[in-house]
Each structure stands twice: as C-alpha cells, then as structure tokens.
Amino acid sequence: MTDMIRPHRPRAFALIASFSLCLSLSAQAAPIVFDPLDNTETLMTPGAYGDDLKQGTEALASGDSVAAQAAFMRALSRRPDDVVALLGVASSMQLRGERLAALNWTLRAIKQQPTDAKVLEAHTRLSLENGDLPAAIERVRSIVSAHPAAVPPGQALGRLYLLDRQPAKAVDELTRVVELPGSDATARVDLGKALLSAGRADEAVSVLDQVRAEMPGSSLALSPLARAEFARARPEIALAHLTSLEGLTSMSASDYVLKGDVLSALSRHQDAADAYARAADTGPADTLLALKHAQALDRAGRGDEALAAYEDVLARDADNLVALNNAAFLSATRRLDLDKALERAQRSLRVGGEQAALYDTLATVQIARGDTEAARQSLQQALKLDPGHASARERLANLTSEAAPAVAGVAQAAPARTVESPAEPATPRASDVMAPVATAASATAAAPPEEEAPVTAAPAAPERAVEPVDAVQDQADLSDALERWRMAWQGEQYNAYVDAYVADTSPIAGMSRKRWEQDRQRKLSKPGRLEITIESVEWTRIDDDTWMSRFVQHYASSNYRDKSLKTLTWSRRDGQWRIESEAAKTL
Image (cartoon, rainbow, N blue to C red; front, top):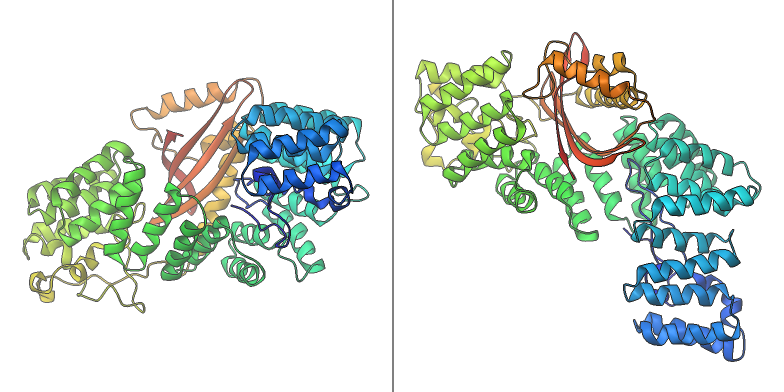
C-alpha cells in the first residue's frame, strides 16, 4: 500500500523517496514517508554541489542508479558528511537491490543527524527489508536514550515496536512522545494505532476522534478510526469514516479490504464483493483477500463467480479449508465435476478434522452423486459430533423418509427461487462453516429447471436471513471473547485461558482433554514473557450458536517466535462463547 507523494515534486530517490511502511496489524497504519527533496534549499544551492544533487535526483527519477550514485558521490567529495547525498547513495544502491550496502549508508547519515525524522524513517525501511528489525530497534532506542526530548526518534521507536509486534511497548513509548513539545497529530495517530493493536479500541477511538475533530478536512485519522470503530462492533460508524476517507484521498488496498469487511458485517454482500475487488486491483495478490472476495460473492448469491473465486484461492493454497469446503458445496449444487467435489469434501475433513459442518457438506456432494447410503452415514456422523445440527437432522429425515429422489433431498428444503435477485440473498446452509452461503435449500435455484424436484415432495423449511438481526452483536461478543482468550494466554493466566474453552472436550484433535490441560499448564508455567498478537480476523457464522474465527497469529517468547494461520470454532454454551476446537498452520 502506498500514499501519494506531493504531485509536483520529482519522484526521485527510488523506493526510499516514496516508501511506506505498512504496519500489518489489526489497524491500518499510516505510512512513514521519507523525501529528501523536502530540503529544497539544499537542492537549489548554486554551484557544483547543487548541480551534483540535481543530476543525482534526475538520474534516480529515470531509474539510472549507476549515474545517480556517481552524482551523489561527487557531491560527497565536496561535502563528505552531507545527509542528502548520503541518502542519495543509499537510494541508488537500494534501487539495484544492494540493500545491505544501502543500510550501511543510512547508518552514516544517522551519525550525522540522529534525530532527523527522515533519516530515521529511511533507516527503518531498509532495516525492515534486510530483516534487521531487532538491531534497528536497539539503534533507535540508543538514540532515544541520548535525545529523550526529541520527538522523531521516539516516534520512530514506537513505530518499530509496532512492526515488531510489540504493541504494549509501542503504547508506552508513543504515550511519552505525544507529551513532548513539538509533537504533532501524526504522533497521536500512531498512538491510536498502537492502542488498537494492543486491544484497547475504546481508548484508540478517543485519541483518533480528537485528531479528526481538530482536522476536519484531513484524512490522517480516518482509516485507523474506521478500523477502531469496527473493532468496537460499530460498522455503520466505520463505514461513514471510510466514505469520508474516499471523498478526500485515494484509498489503499487495506482501506478497501476494511470497507469490504464492514459491508459484510452489514450484510451488504454485493457491495462487499465490489470493495474486495477494488482492493485486489489496488494492491498485491493475497490469499486471504481472494478468500474474502469469494465468500462475499457466495453470500451475494453469485454462485458461479464464487466457485471460480474459490478455485483461485485453492490455486494459491491447496489446503485452504474454507475454499475446499465451499467449492465442494457449490460444485455439488451445480452438479459440476462431482468427482472433484467429492475429493475436496474428503480433503476438507483431512485438513480440518472431524466437524459436523464438514460432514454436512460431504453429504451434499454424496447426494448429488446419487450415493444416498454414503450420505446417510455422513449425516449420522455429523449428528454424532453435533446432535443439534439442524440441517443434518432435516436432511437425514428426508433421506430416511424416501419421500423424494436422491438429489431432491438437497433441493427440497425450500421452494425454488432466483439466487441472482439482489432483493433476496442466498440463505445460509448448514455447511456455512467457513461459510458457504447458499443453504442446501438454495440448491434448487442453481439446478437446471428441468431437474428441479416438485416443491410438494417434502415440506419446506422456513428460510433464515443471511445475517440474523443479532449477528452483529454476536460478533461483538465473540470479539470480546477472542480478546480475553488472547490476553489470558499472553498473561499466562492458566485458569482464565482454560475457561475460554468448552469444558467437556479437547480442542485439539487426537489429544485427550486431560493431556491437553497438562500440556497447557506446563507451557504457561514456564518463566519468561509472552507476546501474542493477532490480525486479519475473519468471522464466519455456522449457525445460531456456532461461529468460526480465522486469523493470523504472531507468537513470541524469550527464545521462540512464529507466525501461523489459526482457526478457532466457537460454541455458545449457557450464554457464553467458548472455543470448541482449534487448528493452526505455520506460515
């Protein structure tokens, strides 16, 4: 994601001159932009030195890194410690892919101007590209120690902590910075982002809303403010901020993803699909974004396009549980390549473990193939895992009654209807695990007219809305439960952590409850500090009392760190949301 550099200025200094550091956290981060051309007085210096800088700048703008470096080196021969020329050389080397050498040149610039914001930002960018973030934190921390009253080093350190998934430290440092003389609105926006990343959404809104009120014509705080309001389960307000943002500036890919998430929460699935498509057009290809787009198309009733979109996801990630399950269902309801649909349904069980919703999808495929006995066994297994699974129970009753042909068992749960109608979105099916959208009932709409079963062959089940009225509240409650789980884990609070899980089962397939508890107690009792952060959380409703969350998790201890894609299945028990199962895939 990039921000626009001022339009009438030459686009020089390659990536450093217009780079942005995206803090890929729960909140969208404002980019850190370094532009040495802000020093127009230096560039306009008459004589050979000024000419060298001008020639170097023009060469970088044209992509000629060799000529650019030669010009900046001539400038350095005249003024050996000139920061603009030092960063010009760094930019030239970066343009050729010599990132380590470029980083070393920024270190020379830091020695000359250790508190200059642009120098620190350039150094941060190259440190990140070189995988040298811990070292960069130590270098900037030492600068902060030497210059505690200087705003730029403290603000740079706070941003580095965010990049290193240390939001608590970022909050502490940025809270100090915003109290310093000379601190501006950008530091307060950074503090708002850090608060949000630390799970303190209410405080983030307070800080960011103050910036917005003070700068009504500015887009500075709007994106993180929208993200914070969405984290507070206030999608209408989040959408209003995004609408204002779109009217003021070009939205980034991350902004469009957020807009899609907000619109999905408001059950505006067609608009959400459009927003995700805009995100794909604006930024780089991403598996999670492709999955969001596919699900939005699915929920909007655009099944053929959704199936193609799920195929795209599987081309990127062959074991993506959501795409496997949903593609299998859509293929079955359209009777397209049923052998592949069966393989995907079976594979989803191997990837995701035994879940009632996955067996329900397998039964859908088996019914479409005419294998009613296998479908009956799959539905029985679904009910064994979850006796309250309504769709499996209804469909098994239809098969047992033998009141209709095999495929009609899928199609007869509700009268036929046109899924393309924007006024009548597809209803959720039992296998909405990861959330296929059209119910088994909506299979009729997808089947060719001549193959539709008579509506009178079986009683019609009442239709349900794609998102119930209380879905937004459920998601807010679930978000709170997810945060309590994260905080209990990070705080190594064993009792609170275990209480986040359903009491009568083990969340890990193949591990007994007793063994799981012993394993968790052993790990949580180890000395040392944990840091757990999560991002890109996606919620999927399975049924009234079951949801699934999928997110990227960052785990860090004193001697180990990893990044994984985690899936938690949540069940409502006695009015409380608890984790029933979990799965993780290392990224």
